[in-house]
Image (spheres, one colour):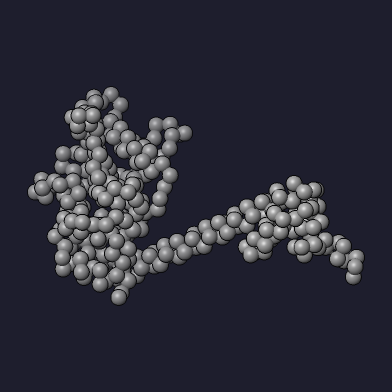
Length: 299
């Protein structure tokens, strides 16, 4: 099975949406707008203006403007992020207010729609395409100016509509998966997107970017594994020292020796000894830790 360039990376995600047909069909499938009502979807500036230098700068992934001047932001977020919901509202609110110039009336504010494609689960509910709008408790709409769509890639699909096809495309990793999707896809936009993915996978520059991204992910995972392991070792060492401090004064050499140890099995053994030791000297003898200065004198 030949590997393809995944659409779960910023560079391939943005490259895909350079294709206007892909943009039109994606918007039509997700927002359920008839295709004939979308004559064009113009790519807009992804930088959001900030009024004060201390304000947080907003940078959106892919921003489009529809014929009725509605603005649509498509965001890809694969890794879990703390306060993602607040971050999403922050970008939506900046996009909503960004287009209003000084002195303009509020009726000039454009409808803003955020589409978030997530590689993690927000909840345990089975729905993988959720739509949020401003409504009161009885379901009456307060305003149509706000709309947020959340598409979760990690949930089990139970349909065969356009959104389902797009989710399968974003999750595809091999040529075989593309072939299967191409044979069954109901969305014409997905078929166009499959062509783009095939071209992307052949382009040398994009392939190099893909490999560089994979290396970055592997390196980041290795660093995180090291930090986690180091944190666990440090935690065990601190536990040993706390237990020993309850039985007496811990000499500096012993403290340093325990803190420097990184082997998990050794630390586990020392932790058991410390829990049963009557005093610090008893721990020293049973653990086999020696004072380097005393060891030198014996020689």
